[in-house]
Structures are given as structure tokens and as C-alpha cells.
Length: 155
Image (cartoon, rainbow, N blue to C red; front, side):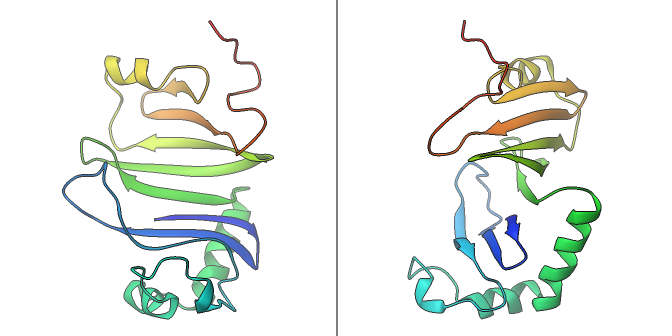
């Protein structure tokens, strides 16, 4: 699941099924820049996705759930999160804390400490900077503009 708050009435929401192969996602729902309180089902951009109301029922969520998530994120000075499994089927939690329009900054928290080869993978200086044990700083660039951390120097 991934949720990103642009404002109270404007979020990105993606929910996918848990499956055996974590590199292949089967989406239940995915919509960018939607209003969770007044969702127009005609904007549900793929016919194979669940209807938004069906998704909320499946998750046991209400409109209050979105308000509660936003309040918790606000208290932590964050704007979103992404919970998924990594290639080793371990939990990987990403918490998004800031915009550098159109990109976003986040922390990735892994279930276990990273191994040496994983540290190398998650320390490229462009998208990821290894912080410690199971924590990585992450930058996701947007459609245009900067694609790496600001101080990244190409080799």
C-alpha cells in the first residue's frame, strides 16, 4: 500500500495484493490526485481495479480513516508512506517526509539490517544514501527536473 497526501482532499493511493513474487505487483486500486471524500468512480483509470467503495470495505476503512492517517502523518511531519515486501519477502516501510517539487524525500526502513551487498545497492548517492543498519535515505525525482539528491556528483 502506498498513500501520499498532497493536501487533505488530494492524495495518491495505491493498494496491491500480497503475492509470492514481491517484484510483481497486482494492483487492487491505484489513483493519483484523488479526493478520498468525493471520489468520482468514472476517474478510476483501469477497469480491472476495485471500485473505491469496495476497496474501503475490504480494508475496513471509512472517511475517518483518511483523516486519522493524515493527522498521524502531520504529527510526524510526514506526508505519506509505502509498505511493501522487498525481494527477500521482508517488510520494507518507506515514510515520505518532504517535497522537492516534483520529487519527494523519504526514509526506507527495512525489517532486518542490510547485508554488505545490499548496503552497496542502497548507497548509490543518487537515489539512495545508506544511513545505518536498516535505514536508507531515498529520493524519488519527478517527471522533470532533478532526478538525484542535490549534492550528487556523477562519476
